[in-house]
Image 1 (cartoon, rainbow, N blue to C red):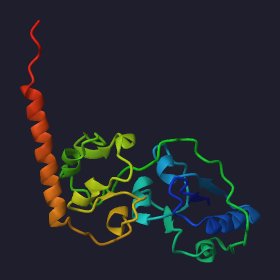
Image 2 (image 1 turned 90 degrees about the vertical axis):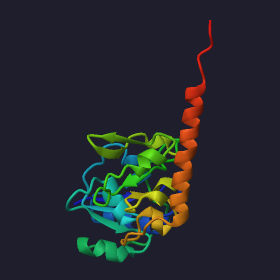
Image 3 (image 1 turned 180 degrees about the horizontal axis):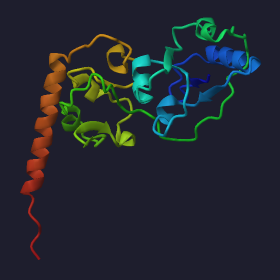
Image 4 (image 1 turned 135 degrees about the vertical axis):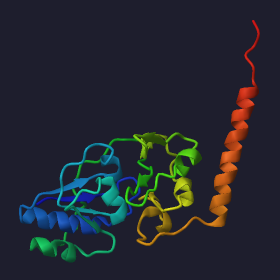
Length: 216
């Protein structure tokens, strides 16, 4: 039994008072509990095995964890510490101290898309749309292969995804961060944006092709 807690170091959207209470309860009962500075950042490497992950949007978190069976993903923002700890036969311990964990030293803000493999139909709209090379196709499937190339706070590709399969866990917008269970189709303006972006890229490509090499 092991609990993983995301501290959301870069966006501070998770309540540190709750984190401290859960950490104190686990320490008092000798229950393994690890606080990671930022789960998005940690997910870019191989995550350790956990039974329970306390973070934000469960659907996005499950995708980041590779949809591992048996992992319980809980939204720390809306579930109380006592309800989280009850399955472990624990009670929260009030703590005035800040949660204790080693902060990440990465200056890069871990903002990047997460793909819901269950919803994704491999339409590849995101690959065509993204101008930063975040996506690529590997073995016929769309992958996020260059997360650090993503433009911070830009969720545009999630807006045009027909299946709502693209999530940005740090986005404050429910439609984009994975917190909604129902599928929301792109709006007409989103589709126009997609078409305009492709038209703009095509023009740039034609212009580049028209440039001839200087004669020696």
